[in-house]
Length: 209
View: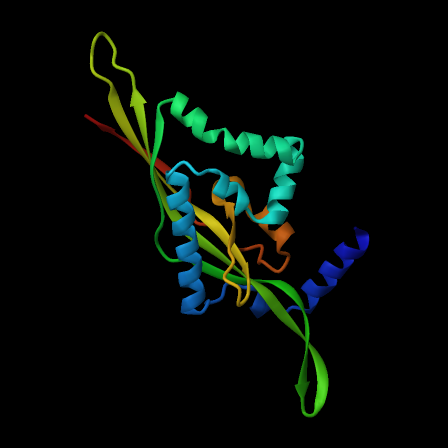
């Protein structure tokens, strides 16, 4: 544990400051991440919440599982979300990516390149991390009072997904933005800048008659 922490600290010092900041991902990388978030949302809207569990970033999933008392408890809790929503009159109507993603290169390491006829070790980044803004809409059924018909309230939430993939693989896993902070992300990806800003999380509701 101590050795891994020292290694991370040493690598962080070696990474040039400019490379720790926000960057621009190739269009195909951004498109792939956005499409993956869209596909995730479509599955969750259909009630397939298991997909969200399966596609959670593995190390983040392990950390959350520890807080919940084990992986089995975490999976059971997440699997019960759909049932709880139904019992409380909550229907997920849509979940989709929106806006402009923010990209970072993470997963710092070393690679050997040939320069001037000799091998040289250089810093490299092995993963993409994108913050992808999302919009989620819920419909809540409010029972009618005094013989009145039920009323419906639509709740619109803006948030984001953290999408992570090894470079050149486009195999995306996710961290839900509603449950993560900058310090937590920086513990997972130590080259992220401490000045990074996460997309806003907002909620508003309107009654539908």
